[in-house]
Length: 197
Ligand SMILES: Cc1cc2nc3c(=O)[nH]c(=O)nc-3n(C[C@H](O)[C@H](O)[C@H](O)COP(=O)(O)O)c2cc1C
Image 1 (tube, protein in one colour):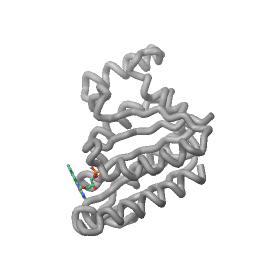
Image 2 (cartoon, rainbow, N blue to C red):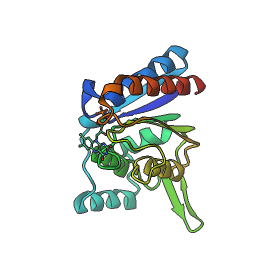
Image 3 (cartoon, rainbow, N blue to C red):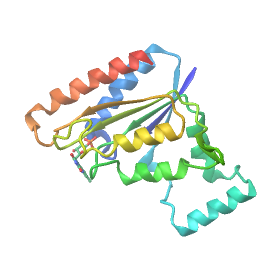
């Protein structure tokens, strides 16, 4: 049984087009069997960006080797996932701040990565990050304007996760008469990807 960590950052809830694509992905994945999903709904968890107080508190715990503190639970969950699925809309040319805050909280030395004199390496076991997203503007995958997937792919590499796949639909707030089709096309690509996992 593989554990799939679902980072649900679809902040518009049931109105979210990204969520429609993610739902199609999980429908197929769960029908295949052999997967259990742990969902983290980013809008519902009490995480804060690291300010000085949070940073110093965390450094103190790490210096004491107190990795049993509850503040590290999300990082441990992330490190032991077999597949990580991120569903998030494209905001301000990148990922929503809630998602960035999540990654600040799970990037913990000794849990998701470690650094020695020889360099840094990831401690995560996931075979893959799957990133599902929709963009309002006509910004294609690979555009310089698209700064979400380069960041997520870099984190994937940093954590030593085996691969990175993206499923996107874009132009949704421009080609308004084609939204349904664009979302359906992306949902189909997402289901094909789910069949390969
Ligand atoms: C706060 C906010 C910021 C956004 N920033 C961008 C942006 O920088 N570029 C873009 O193409 N679309 C942007 N959009 C549009 C969304 O990417 C687009 O509507 C997307 O489909 C929303 O996903 P959802 O339906 O899953 O919520 C933004 C939307 C919101 C609400």
